[in-house]
Image (cartoon, rainbow, N blue to C red; front, side, top):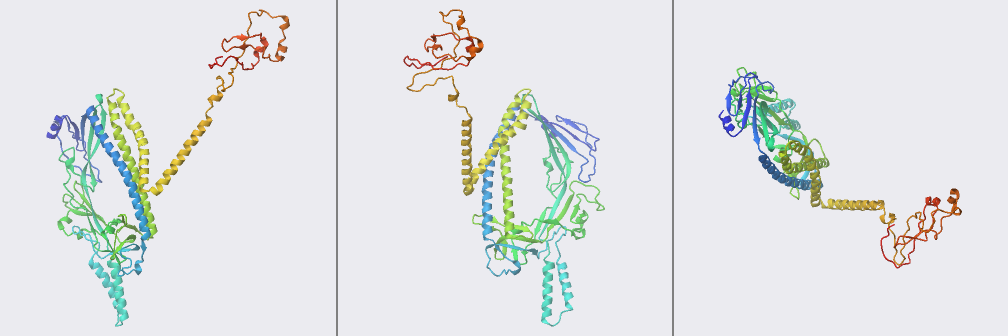
Length: 600
């Protein structure tokens, strides 16, 4: 209540409900508490919580606050943009260095046969070798708290004793039989005693409260924002510790234990051999990840009797620990703090390895560039197959990091553009729709359009820096192809364009040293003042005969002066000849040449 009142003074309002099977509700607002909370019990089966505590927190943010937050995001976006570029450049360099390390290793690797290998011979010492063999160990791993073990010395001794007694009846004073018995005993020791697990791991999962939040933003007038955050609480099984002190709801019932009752732990055999001849280092054992469930857990093996009363066997490989003591060791309820303890082991298998052999021990090989080379796969693989798989993994990681760098660049551009969308919130009526359109559609498209070419350009520069032998010819060839395509496009465009100088008949042509000529316009009927208004019968010709008459001669054509635009020696043009296509003739002007624009 005091917390709610304190937050109410800061302008934060809370609306939350706590229910006991949906019966009693409590609502508080603005720091005033009304009603009582009645806590009731509930059982949980299969991780489904029967009591859910919900809390809604409402906060307001002004327009200036939003702009300030957007500007901070823009600054972070600029930093993120630089980080994406650095990641892309680093990725290309890493890929090139890894490829060179694999190439160097493939050139110097030496294949050895462990069946005929003598570790006392130093022929392949300090060399990169490839070997195939089965892993084995004489170490027995044990969890002292729960008594889980990977084997017992008694079982191994009993197996050896059975082999010895089985051959004892055949033992005579003959030295050959004695040697046969010793050989059988050593084989039993290597096949039985060395079949122990290489690693033992204890896993822990605890039943805890988990907080979930759901935010809903509503834009208000003036460009502000009202945020409603709903917090819900569920019970889940989790292998990660959840600190309930960070919950928004400080209800005493939403409390998790302060720590796990048992820690996660792992045991590794001290001495692991490959093919019973070569010892492997910690760098090699860290790559053993083929875990499988153990099948021999037993409550009677737990040394602590009080712990036995609080655990039960959940499966062949796990125990169930009750946070509260149970009377009959039968799980009827699931309480906060209950824990499942499971066990997994790494069994010895056949592996193929490429590593450095030094003094009978396998470890990571250091290349000339300072990189480490250690390849390991379960099964029988040649050295070429191991290097091929390593190259494929390198390519996959390269493309993954390229995609991650591209996504980071897109996000950074969105953060840089965010203030623009925030600025539109202050516009009445359309600000909300405009801002949502910018943030949800336009800005992502712009970010992708900007980030894609920049990412490719950065990768190209990294290629030029790390792979000049391959990148320079590619860039030069691409540039030459682009130039050729541009020149061809320009040439085709020039061929398709019309020649304005040749197609424009309205402008007169003039040749230096030649008299100025101009095309006469189409002659129109003209009647001289001395021409009688009517024609004589002698000049009348039938219409059909007029069509067959030859065109009038040049003397009969009306001549025009370029200065006075008046006809010279104009004669009457019959009406029938006015429909014929005029013949353009140049009129030579004998006057001195005066350059001027001809206008018909």
